[in-house]
Length: 487
Image 1: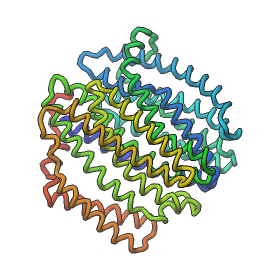
Image 2: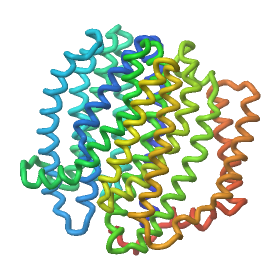
Image 3: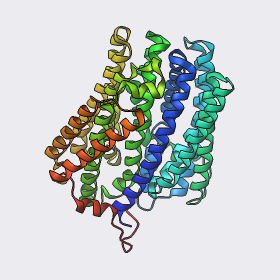
Image 4: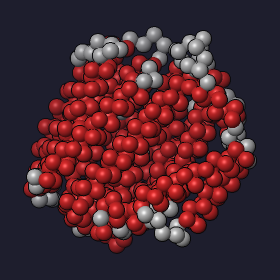
């Protein structure tokens, strides 16, 4: 199977399982929102916001640098992975102890504090499983772990339903998340053991080198949290739990979709890392095709989310969450920016320009915090949604120019995207969805009709205007058994 086919196979399988996972996640969210109500879901959103905070602090850029390091020629993969697992163990112990003590100083009630304590257990399982993803990304076998993550979603749904039936409250909901993460870690560990022997190593000299490389990304992940996740915490400080719940319901949908750009670039990044220095022309071709693929996916997804109606949220979350629709429509543009930013950020990472990301995100985080503190007290979740979206767009624009300067400097072929074709196709899809929104459909039927007709028009116009060709599709799915499977 050629390289493009391998990436496509992984992407398609992962995308299919993720779509099913998204459906399960939406069902889970529906059960939780109906059970907890807007205020209870607001508390749940606050707890999960702190989970993302401690995840950002403990990650410290380790996962991305691990993928880069083990993907390079002649890398000592077993030794690198063992040291990263040892480093992860120590860092989790430190973060858990410090974080647990820190919760006593938070201005929240006992329910939220106890929920945050449980999240430290979830952190242990999720951190180790995420660390192992580099092993799968290097070998382009993320499709194998995707099925296991899907089963984890099923477990979460089942335990959530059980918790609701037996009135276990918000803690039962969190235990469902922990059960899911625990299963995924066990499955990931077993699968990774098929490729190399896993162990823990505590080489502090190597840790110093690794942390020096990952520190900019770790700090960047933290400031990334500040401008895209901290808004929920600020909402909980300035507004009621009801407002946090409205924002959280919309963000849960977006949160599930953010996986796609991360998954896609996780597959491509090892190839970028392998080729960028010693085969720059080959890297340029891959980068060009990757960027085009991201645009092809991003445009219809943003348009589709923007045209979701009140009925969709009402069915998913309940009548009390209809205000979440406008929040989701605004955040749809943030999702599009995240898709593109993942590409440009990956280019900067593989050319060892992580520090540039730090400066980009730190500046944007500072701007976001100031704007949120000013406007959230007056405009609540609307301010949080708009500010998050604008900050994501700003990061994308800056990362674009920096990646051109430092990462893609071997010609201008990568910029020759079919922009006019994209515009025509997007306008066609907008016209179709706008027209369909004038009619009333049952929820599932309406989503199927809008998705199908919108997609058909979009793809039809792409082919008709030359933005996509059958030759490109054949290149993606063509199997060539005589092509080496290395990078």
